[in-house]
Amino acid sequence: MSTSASNGIPDELREALRKARFVAALTGAGVSAESGLATFRDAQSGLWARFDPRELATPSAFARNPKLVWDWYAWRRERVASAQPNAAHHALVEVERRAPQFLLATQNVDGLHQRAGSRTVVELHGNIGRVKCSREGTVVDRWHAPAGEVPRCSSCGALLRPDVVWFEEMLPGHALAAAEDAARNCDLLLVVGTSAEVYPAAALPSLAANHGAVVVEVNPNRTPLSAFADYVLRGAAGVVLPQLVAD
Ligand code: BV8
Image (cartoon, rainbow, N blue to C red; front, side, top):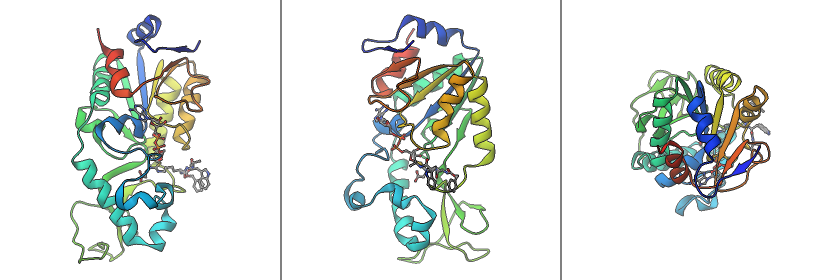
């Protein structure tokens, strides 16, 4: 049954969430929109307006112009550092507190779920706050970049890069396995703020539905998921999720 809820939350959904033994969540850039962080499909602002993020978030872009890609991530890292978790992040912490079992799989790289207090967070696409050697993969916690250059690994000399998953790169196996396991076993899956177009993350909602989970979409806009979600809550995550956990 697909119910839109323009005025609050359907009672049967509230009841399903209350009874759920295992609740899972899948989030995308939309959950951080009310923290002031642009989603991938929003136009990049200012200097970056002329670039398509999906062009920059690729190994070939980094190989072609490492400085441009490094600077784009440095700019995003600064915006993430000055952003705060919003009511949507905090509501998901409350969902986790109430659920006997919970797992949050995020496509976001901003770390805001962890900063809000979510504990079982699986980062499907890495974290922009981490930097790693592009050859060895080792994460480094400090780096020095001569002016105008991309910093290099102190042990092997290769360029450093953000520890995120670019398009055409495999997701971390342990993260994807944990998210797929949660999709197969959860009773209810909240899908919040994602266009549901980037795979393999976008396959998780149908995996959950095929294993009998109640699937709930929270998004102001329609997505490919809207057609088969059991509940479609058309609204901003920062408005809808607090309603979901309101007593
Ligand atoms: C892979 C980290 C195997 C980096 C990201 C051809 C060649 C190669 C690969 C492919 C190919 N065709 C398809 C693929 C697979 C590809 C893919 O799915 N492409 C898509 C474009 C079709 N996937 C991959 O490449 C993945 N790896 O498949 O490896 C492989 C290997 C080699 C060759 C083939 C396959 C890797 C995918 C991970 C890429 N990295 N992020 C970084 O951040 O810089 S993905 C990035 O874009 C985000 O993480 C997010 O997941 C995704 C989409 O971004 P957005 O659309 O902005 O965000 P989101 O989806 O969350 O949408 C925003 C939503 O929020 C909207 O719906 C909006 O309505 C809503 N919203 C707005 N405001 C609010 C709101 N919702 C609630 N409240 C609000 N206030």
